[in-house]
Structure formats: structure tokens, C-alpha cells
Image (cartoon, rainbow, N blue to C red; front, side, top):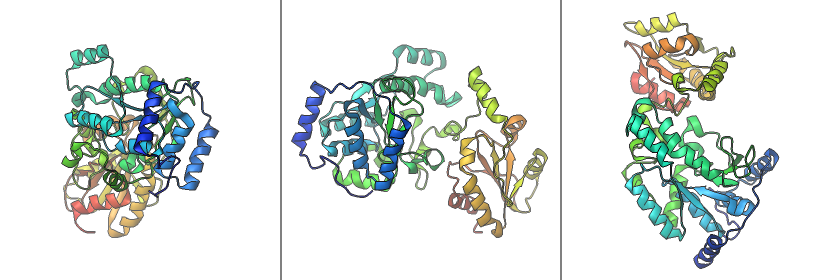
Length: 415
């Protein structure tokens, strides 16, 4: 992150507090607006050309949207976004989702943040009747059995949707490096592809991600030098922090978000396979996606396996060579996103004796793959090591060439 001064960044604390108090008492009323793709694309291009800092992005967001914008604060290192907002000297709003299942340390941080920045966080809560119905029907920990999406839908998504429907823009702390498999395309600003704002309809809500190009190290260096309050759980190995039952500490070298919903083996952080939980409309859409004939992983170094081929490989008593196979669906965006890395790994490691293969595991092969190849999500990577029987499944979301090489060598030894 480059150092830079945004407009108002040198205003003193007293001036900033006075500005925020004035805003709290009499907020500027703006008619709900609808941004165009051209507007937002132009702003994003300007950010990229100028290599805008988080402070500059935050300042422009507040200048453009004023009181129609609010910062989403989860109680983790996204407190950095609040720190940047304070540095602009402009009035700003912060909201948090209290799901009812947060860690005590997160509630303590909310209090510290309010006092440190002299602000009042706008808390959002789930509908009590919806929570009561879910818990009474399925129990307190149903997400361990059937996935986190239903619980998150009740406790997080619905209240978030309701809050965003009162705004013209919102700010998150998302970064590209948090999870390369799912967040490597986070733009500095965009028309929100999922939620709607106060005006309703497409273009009614703009989303800003000021930290998108920052690394974890840069964010933490910033928090330390600014003396910003942080969640005490970070000192215990927690990096990505959510609800208490769904968050755990990560080990050195693990990706940040591997501590979230870990029991799902990344299935619902990726392409979930539980089509039985889909509505008829969603099921029809998925069927349409699965009907594609366009294939991926089309590379000379990657062998296309049939069911008989991979079954024979699985049943070999002793593998004569090391093979890394990807179980995939060509319509899955996460499979599509790893094509380049998988092909690069094949070019790099093929000369070292590693064979690369692919097996299309959707359609009629899905159930068989789940039963015989431990597949719970797309993509699934299986290593069949030379001199051994069976396979080892890659357990993380890290599928870049370097991570694949580390995975293979951790099982087979140095190539």
C-alpha cells in the first residue's frame, strides 16, 4: 500500500468527532440513486490508473455517496476500513450484523471500536421468528449436518439484505489474498451483483473494497502503527472471524478462510453438490449448466480419464507412477479458475515424473464419484503416489502451482 494523503486526512480528532456528531444529529438526505456500469467502471479504472491507496478509495466513496454509504464491520481485521474512514475526516457510518452467535471477544471489540472512534455502530439483527423456527426444527447446530447456508441465510443474509436496501453504497474489508480460490477477482468498486440498494433494481447499490490489493501483512502493519483496536482472537491464531461455532484458528501456512466452515471440506465455499436442497428453479438452472459440452483442462500434458480408467487407478495395489487427478465439472467457475494453474503445474512437474489427469465427475458420474472417490465439491484433487496404493485428497483450497508442488512433495518426497 502506497502512502498518500486523501482529502481531509490531516483534520484533527476534535474536528472529526464534531463532524460525525453533526451527521448523527442531522444526516444529509439524498434521493436514492442508481449508478450505471459506465459510472462505476470509470471510477474503478481511475483507481487502477492512479494505483489508488485504500485511503484514497475510501475518501472517494464517502465523497460520492455521503450518508448513503455505510461500512460493514464484522469484528475482525476489517476494522482497518473504519480506521481509513476516520482518516478522511469525513462523516461515516458503520453497521454490524449481530447473529446471536458471535464470540465474546467480538462483542468486546465492538465496544472498543465505538469508544476509540467515538461512533455508534448500527447493529442489525435476524428476525426472531425465523431464528426460533430454524432452531426449534433443526436444533442449535444443524449446520454441522446439512451445511451453513440455511443458518447464514437466516442470521446474516436476510438482515444484511434489509440493511443494504436502505443504502446507495457499502464498504467491505475483502481482499484478493484472503482466499485465492474465491476472492481473487475482488474489484476496488463495482455495482453489487447480488444485493439491491434504496432505489431498488440493478445499479441501485455500489460496493467498495478499499483493501482489495492490500496483503494481510500490510493491513496488520497499518493497524499496529495506528494503534487501532483489534479482536483478541487474532492473538490466538484466528484470522478470519465469524460466528463462534463456525470459526477456528488456522495453522501456519494455511489460507485465512480455511478456519471457516472447515467441516464442509470447502464444498459450500465452492460449488456445493447438495442438489436436493435446491428449489425447482435452482435445480433447473444447475441442470442447464451441467448440460454444457464445452470441456476444460484441454492440455497435451493432462490425460482424460474414463470411469474405468480412474477406477483401475484407484484399485491398483501399487501405483507405478505418481498421478495427480482433478475431479471437475466444466461449468463450475472454481474449476475454470484453476485451469491455468493446473496446466502450469503439469508443464513444470511432468518432466519430474508426475502425471496429470482429469475426470469429469458431474452428470451421471457424480454419485459414483461421491461414493468411490471421496468427492464432496468441485474441484476435488486426488494424488495417487508412486509405490503406494489408494490416493490422498488435497484438503485445502490452495490450488496454485506452488501449492500443488508442495502437496505432492509432502507425500512423495522431493521430486
